[in-house]
Amino acid sequence: MKLAWRIVGLLVGAVFVFAGLTKIVDFQPFRFLDPMDFARDIDNYKILPWGICVALALYLPWLEVICGIALIFRRWYSGALTILFALLVVFIGASIAAKTRGIDITCGCFGHLSNQLSFAWHLALDFAIVAAVVALWWKRPDDRLATNP
Amino acid sequence: MNLPTKALLGALFLCISTGAHAQLAWEKTELEINPAPGADSAVATFKYENKGTTPINIKAVRTSCGCTTAALKKNDVAPGEKGEIVATLKTGDRVGQQVKTVTVETDDLKSPQTILTLKANIVQLLELQPVFVSWTANEDPKPKTIVAKAGKGVTIKSLEVTSSTPEFTTKVEPGSTAGEFKIIVQPKETGHQATANLTIKPDKSAGEGKVFNASARVMPASS
Amino acid sequence: MRPLLRQSVLLLGLALLPAAVQALYFRDRISWESRIAESDMVSVDLARSWGTDAVWIDARPDVDFERDHVPEAILLNEDRWNELLPQFLQQRWSPEKKIVVYCSAESCNLAGDVARRLREEAKLPNQIRVLKGGWEEWLKTRK
Image 1: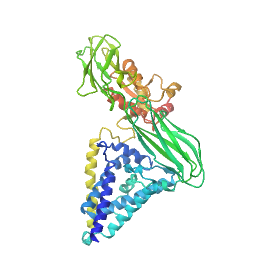
Image 2 (image 1 turned 135 degrees about the vertical axis):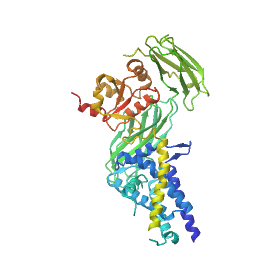
Image 3 (image 1 turned 30 degrees about the horizontal axis):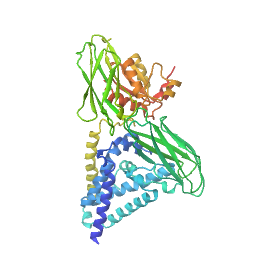
Image 4 (image 1 turned 120 degrees about the vertical axis):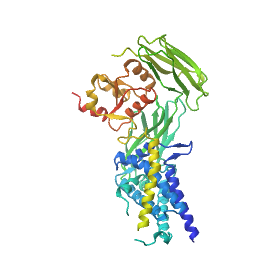
C-alpha cells in the first residue's frame, strides 16, 4: 500500500514539474519562454495590477517545479503539499471569479499544450489533481509532523 | 494556512477552464500559425459548436488591431450547429511573433465574452541588421557593414545592392553562413551631408520582386 | 505546526532563486510598469514640453493617420515599415532628437512594437519613448 502512495506522490510531483516547465521553456525548438507573454496571460483576467502579473509570471512556474521536485524526492513533503493545495484552491476560486464575470479564457495550465484538451477533460484533470493532493496529505508519513513546539 | 494572501492571489494563472458550462464550445481558443516566408497574410480558423439546447447569437466580433480582420459567416448558431471564425492577419512588414486577439461577444449568459488568440510567427524573406548606417560630419569615412540574412527556410543565392546616389559605394560579400551576406557601405567623404537609399534585391529564387531598403547618411555638421 | 511552516517557507524561498535568475536573464524584455515591454513611456505634458527637440511618430494604420494626427508627426507603421522607415531615416531623423512614438490609446501595442524595432533594427541612439495614453491622451490636451 505504501508503494502505491509513493507512486501517486511521484506522479503528482511529476505533473507539477511538467506544468511548471511548460511555462518556462519551449521544447521544440528548445528555448526559454519570455515571461512577459505569461504575464500578459495573467493580466488578461484583469484582476491583478500589471506589476504583480510580472512577478507571478516569473515566480509561480518555479514554485510549481520546486514543489513538484519536493514531492518526487519526498523532501519537505508536507510543506510542498500545503503550497500545492493552496495554489489549486486559489485557482478554483479564480476560475469561479472569471466565470461570474463572463470571461471565457482558456488559459495555459500546461502551457500551450492545454489547448489540446477539451474543457471537460481539463476540469476532470484538475479535480483529480486536487483529490490526489488531498489524499497524499492524508497519507503523509507521520514522522514529518512530529508534534514539537 | 500560513501563507500570505498575496501569494495565494498570485496563483491565478493555473486556471480551471470554466468552458465546460458554456454552451458555445470552441475547439481551440489559441492558434499558432507559421505562414510561409514573405506571405501576405496569416490565417487562422477558430471552430465553434453550440453544445447547448438554445440558440446563441454572436453579437460582435472585435479584433485587437486594424491589421487583423475576423470573418463570421452568420451570427446565429442553432443548437448543435457548428461554425467558424476566420481571423486574417495582414503581415505587412511585420517580423517575429505577432500576437493578436479576437474578442467574440455573444448572448450566452454563461460566457458572454470569449477571447481568441492568434499567434503568427512571421518570417521575412530578408533580415537586415542594422537597417541604417550613418557617419557624423568629418568622421573618418570608414566602411560600415550591414548584415543581410535570409529568413529561416528561405534560400537566397545573391543580393544586388544599388545606392540612390554615387556619394556612397556599396559592395556585397558573402557572410559567414549560407544565405548570409555582408553589405559594405562607404561614403566618398564626410565633409558634407549626404543621404542615400540603398535598394537591396534578393535573387529570384527567394520569390518575386520583393525589394528591401536600407539607409545611409552622412550627417550635417551639428547645429 | 513548526516543521510545516519551516518547510513551506523554505520552498517558497527556494523558488525565488531561479525566478530571480530568470528575471535577470530577461531583464531587457521585462517591464514592470506596462504591458509594453522595454519601452519607456513619456507623459503627454512632458513630451509636449520638448517642443522641437522631439520628433513624433504615429504608429497607427494609414487610415487613422490620414483622418487626424499630431501636427508634424510622421507616419511609421508596421504595415508599410519597409517603405516608411527609410523615409523617416533619410528625411526627418537626426541623432540628437528625442523620439516620441504614439498609437491610439494606452492599451494598444503598436507604438511599443515600432519603438522596439527602431532600437533593434535601426540601432538608433536616440531616446525613444512611447506616449503614455497615446493619441486619446494627446487629444485631451489639444488646444
